[in-house]
Length: 68
Image (cartoon, rainbow, N blue to C red; front, top):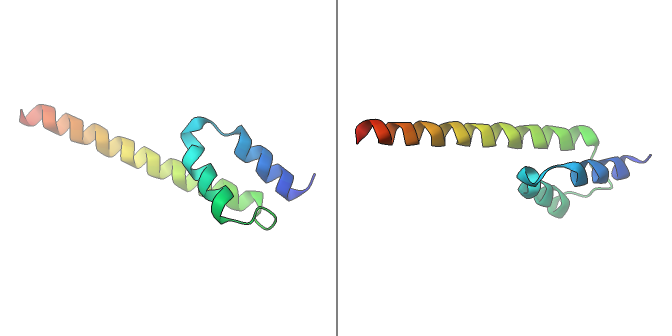
């Protein structure tokens, strides 16, 4: 199977949580050139950033409850 097809299948298999990173990859990167390793790395970075945002939001909510 060609790398492009693997990348396409992987992007289609991701859940809605990854909709924005999938759109960014599809719109800005040539799928004929990108390797699956690069796509995986981008998704992992996106996932880490989302986790950091979630933690920050939890901390902000907790802090607001403690201050009030």
